[in-house]
Image: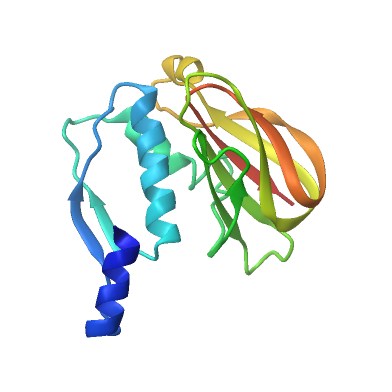
Length: 181
């Protein structure tokens, strides 16, 4: 829908920007909120949305805020999703969404946010960007989030990468940020 709207705006009023003034998918108290928010943010970035305002439905929404943490401070050391969105694809698009970025200040750095929306573990290949170095994984799952008062990613290991594809196993109903440098 955003793509069609952007095309119409470009044809009728070039330079106008799209914003969403109030949104909330719910799920403030379970991993579904983290998954939905991370997916929203990935879509908003991929579609070039100018701005979006989350409308809180309760005074605390820890799982929804976890979705933001997939992109901002995912490692607890202020690392963030890169500043340039790039095309990528999951080998299992029906179950796994992947958003990718590069970092204009750190050549060679690639960050993926991989979202497993299914109720089973998924092995998926992420394709589309040249990769070199180590992939540092940070995950949020139903069990890791339930043990936290502030839902945030936890370190899930590293793996060496090279080439243009990375294969990862994603836990059921999870959000995984992969920082490659």
